[in-house]
Amino acid sequence: MNLAYRFTLFVTGQTPRSQRAIANLRALCEEQLPGAYELNVVDVLEQPDLAERARVLATPTLVKDLPPPPRRVIGDLSDRQRVLFGLDLELPAGGLGEASA
Amino acid sequence: MIAQVEKLPTGIAGFDFVTNGGLPRGRTTLVAGTAGSAKTVFAAQFLVEGIRQFREAGVFVTFEESPDDIRRNFGSMGWDIAAWEREGKWAFVDVSPVPGEQPVEAGSYDLGALMARIEAAVRRTGAARISIDSLGSIFLQLSDEAVVRRELFRVASVLRTLGVTGVITAERLDEYGHISRHGVEEFVADNVVVFRNVLDGEKRRRTLEVLKFRGCTHQKGEYPFTIAPGDGLVAIPLSAIELEQHSSNVRITTGSQALDEMTGGGFFRDSIILASGATGTGKTLLTSEFIRGGCERGERCLLLAFEESREQLFRNAAGWGMQFERYEADGVLRVACAYPESASLEDHLIHMKALVREFRPQRVAVDSLSALERVSSMKGFREFVIGLTSYIKHQEVAGLFTATTPTLAGGESVTEAHISTITDSIIMLRYVEIFGEMRRGLTVLKMRGSPHDKQIREFNIDRTGMHIGRAFRGVTGILTGSPRQVPVSELERLDQLFPEA
Image 1 (cartoon, helix red, strand yellow):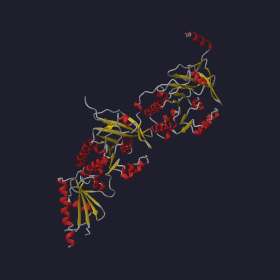
Image 2: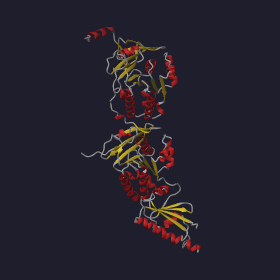
Image 3: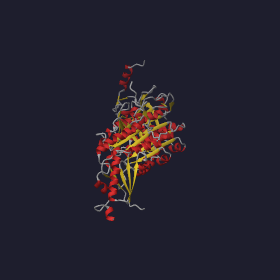
Image 4: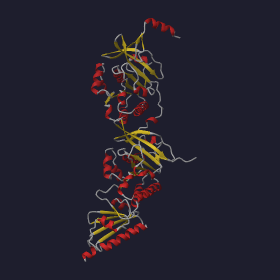
């Protein structure tokens, strides 16, 4: 399966903020990119080397690995407009899912 | 009794002296300075010396330059950071901005990733030292200042729990103003060192000052430092040098038999001699005689010249029948010429010390010391002279410095005023006008630890060098610069006034 979108979300432990970020991202992806995305969640406490490699400073940090260009969004992703803007996602009204259906 | 905070020696030359033993162990010290004040050099060298001298690993957290830039920049200092990384002695935590990738902020965040990465790097390398350069830059990467401030307190406390000794650099806007931009000092308020890079009479002068070390002692005030290739930052705690030189009773020749007699048997081996006089009174000649006296006896002599070029010096010497070329070929003479303006005094000092260390001379001559006055402030010059004399004495070599007096007839030069108390011997060279003719006079003004001739002797210069003759008779007021003939009858009367005991 060739997924168009791949995201990595860096969080610190199971804090409420981490969980909020994960939930916000899942909701957004399910709504906008159903079936077209892959999401990795990295806990920097468990895998600090991955955070080092990706040069992550703050958590949560969302990194869009694919498609290029790479984009980053910092925060718990509660501001959806900012998230979309930050990820450089030009989405048609109603989301990608509907448009492709 | 309250326990003193233990210090961790940094291994940086001079810095451990200024800090009374190093940085407070297990704590974090803020190093604040303006752009170009060598904060990053210090931050890196703190780790470098830990690796080289104490087998302590280090973590470098960089907010500004990329690790690649740092490896390359410090490669020119002779630091092979990449090799230390392979050996697990050095680890980077790279927080430098990703080019072209300005992250968008959408919601609340913290610096958990940064802390996790620092902690992981410290644990992986077993680091005892950490440098964070420069903390203020984090405010440029993240927009929520309140969050960053709150989080920096946590970073500081994480460092404490890790037990590492830390250096955090921060940018300042003014040399003498707020400690740092963004108020970074709030987070690491216990220990603050300030680096300055001040324009002082058209010359850059680097200084460092320990502003505070909570719970432990340190030297106070600004200390000059310089950046030397290979050595990195070298602090020069001149005014803190202790007077603990040995003194020797061994005499060495002045290069002139008559002067040997006048000084009661020659200069002492580890003494500092100042030769002072107006231009053309024969200071360079006296220096050359001093060099010849050493070289002819197989002693290594180092001549540091700041007024004349090598060719001029050699030609002068040849004119007095001295073969400097031969001495040099025999390996007993080293001549180093430099314009005073070619470097700052601190750099001159480092360079001179390096020459002395390398050549191991038994005699050092500086012609002239007063030429170096031009390139520095009074305070800087005084510190330089103290640093130089104490270093030379420490090496147990004889040092001859010359100083040019501003007026032809005499008077005091600034150099004299600054160093006369440090010198062991002072020789004065003066013009003496007698019946419309300029003649040259010489006197031993001071000879610490020995009796000496107190007469003012006339000397001549010819193709074989300096010839000291008889004392001036019938002249008074030479030293003050207004020689006056005294009638013979009056002389006889004076003689009778003070009959020899």
